[in-house]
View 1 (cartoon, helix red, strand yellow):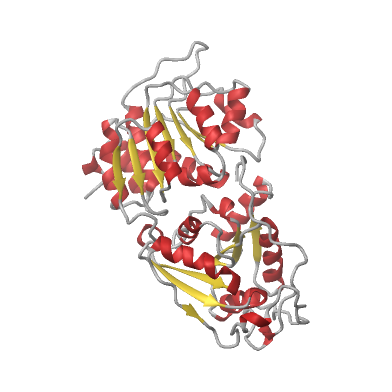
View 2 (cartoon, rainbow, N blue to C red; view 1 turned 120 degrees about the vertical axis):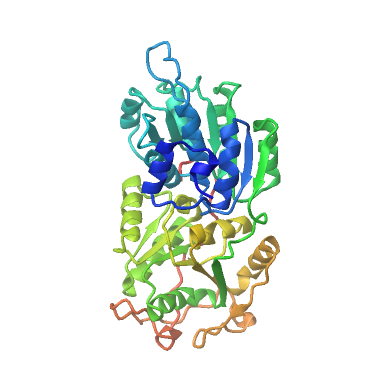
Length: 432
């Protein structure tokens, strides 16, 4: 099946070919014809399956088939709105839409926090057909009356489950209140919960349903491995795995921003170039770290769940859960950064004793059993001899600086533990 056979016009097909797309993915094959019909859609698909093209291509075609009347002030109206949970995802989606629309007269704009609002206001003074925004920054524009949403014809909620996890439901409802009642609504989500179902019932009118994979399942292209290890030796094991296997591009997940900073510094000292990316980093720092990671200058990117949405790297080979997420669904999103668009990938998780209940929740969600592997030299000690007050062993070992990581023998010295507690990630309104 070709993209042309799905009903897309020549200009879009030309742009798709120039992007290197050759054959539609399952979500694209099902979504594109339905979106072209003009009805509402509820779509479930694993991350990395091509959802952006699934809604973006037919959206652009529908907009190109009609012309909108100018607003009362003479400006061209915003005709389509895509909401995303994070800055990185907003930037990624807008970049893709811009590439798809290159042979049309449609114009796109990314809108998110962490950067000056003034360039966005200036851009809105020109023709903008499609806005891709995080909810918080969009509401800033609404409150300052720099954007008029009264002519929006199409609304897309991308990664809707993550937006609800991040506490954006009130913002979403405030945005819905200023949109016209008559519009096409598309809701895309990798996982489904009762909250997502409730939102879909409120938002969508007689929607078509698409689910291209088993709900909350992980992609078959991802090889999952689980290592049992003491909490205090996780970093040593991670350093060894990266160095010993000569991994060149590894995305590592931690639960907290502080933990991401600390781990990145420790890996860097082990001779493994690493940087952290999370919500407290400036947008410039986040963009720089992601760019260096994509082009191979940076070997390890340490991220929190929120910052990782929107990291779309073709053929990313390795994802590591340094710490398991508190919410089992986040495991699906994390490992979905690898094994994208049909390519293979590997996802590793480092499991200490206190995380075993979290592992059981993940096994229940994905309906798979996790067999713990024990790497020689990193065997976990008996559970009863690991009280929380036990002082860490002295650790004077350093990586050799050549990027090979620690050997099992050198790693027998435990890494010093931080006196700062690991606090759960707070969820509230922010832009990633």
